[in-house]
Amino acid sequence: RRIIKEEEPEPTITEQWGEPETKWTKEQFVALMETPTPQTEQILFKISPVVEGKDQEGSSSTVSETQSHPDTKKRPFKCDICGKCCKYQSELKVHYRTHTGERPFPCQTCGKKFSHISNLNFHIRIHTGERPFSCQTCGKNFTHMSTLIVHKKIHTGERPFSCKTCGKSFKRIHHLTMHQVIHTGERPFPCETCGKSFARSADLNIHRQTHTGERPFSCQTCGKKFSRMNHLTLHKKLHTGERPFSCETCGKSFIRNATLNVHRKTHTGERPFSCETCGKSFIRNAALNVHRTHTCGKPFLCETCGKSFTRIDHLNFHKKIHTGEKPFSCETCGKRFSRISHLRLHKKIHTGDRPFFCDTCGKSFIQSSDLNVHRRIHTNERPFSCQTCGKRFTRKSNLNVHRKTHTQQKMPQKCS
Image 1 (cartoon, rainbow, N blue to C red):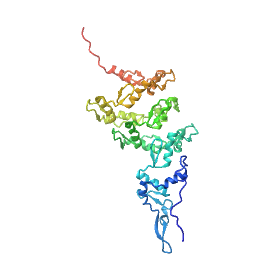
Image 2 (image 1 turned 60 degrees about the vertical axis):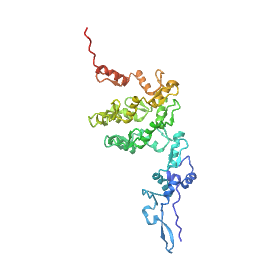
Image 3 (image 1 turned 120 degrees about the horizontal axis):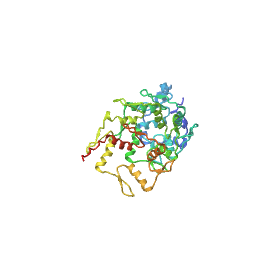
Image 4 (image 1 turned 90 degrees about the vertical axis):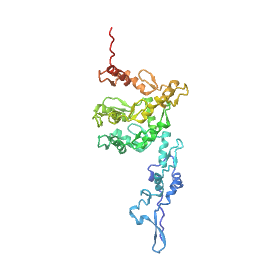
């Protein structure tokens, strides 16, 4: 009488998840997989990797489904919800979490939960700062091997995924997928608080932090806090002065590669974002959205003064002018503000914190934007020009004041 094994041998960690994890041993992982959890155990009774059959002697025996279904020989464990087949029962157990929403692996630092232990270990590197994968070209380090592979394409210039609408190319196919939403205008994820909608659920989750005020990532130099780790990483470069991305045409350098790509269009004249109404084209999609006010109008109207806005969150902020609502108060002097960002800036008046220094004259500033405007004094850059007389200005606000000299009607002089 032959003996049929009831299930496949367990895989190694490398076979199932790729590279070995540094935070968990194989024994710990297998123990976790074998530990029943309430939500998955309610479903696991449906797993049927074997079927009843008769052997040559007529007695009942369990015969693997793989014998009766050769097409499932390599993946005998099938999900009864979506039909996905898995090679191992433990793999199917993990897969079921996509249906139950179960996330049994919490981060002990911030409390965020994950369905896979490997995802937790990758997440932990955000807190530890561990970046084990290094680029041999520029020395930049990464937490994921996949992120390093994508980064290398910056040096090679490889962008294999192109948009059929505007021709823009991307290093990753999901970046192309997200870009295509720009052309379709699809934003299926709305914010329950302010009504603003987003193309990605991840962007909605980040946006929600503007309402909760959650900013878990703090700059050790100036104390400024951020909702995302990559925003903090970019911010740190303001203090270090690091600008690793340089324009080959004019030599201007930038903190972000994305900003460099936008800048290059000033040399090439490329303006891929066009208004369907008037045909005017723009370098950036954000500029097109601002311009579209004559197409979509300003649908959000203030019932008090009649002023209209393109976005409901802008209207909500505006309403506080009429209600006088200022929910954020300074603990030092008691001054109140309608926005928490305004309060954060105000607090630096008391602390004397001016973390942004001019490399030329040494003058310091509370905000990086003020430093950028100040630098124009030394570079003589005046990016805002009057379309009537051609006079140029370092600040847009100064240009707006100047424009009134052309539009303002001269008062009639009294006869003497």
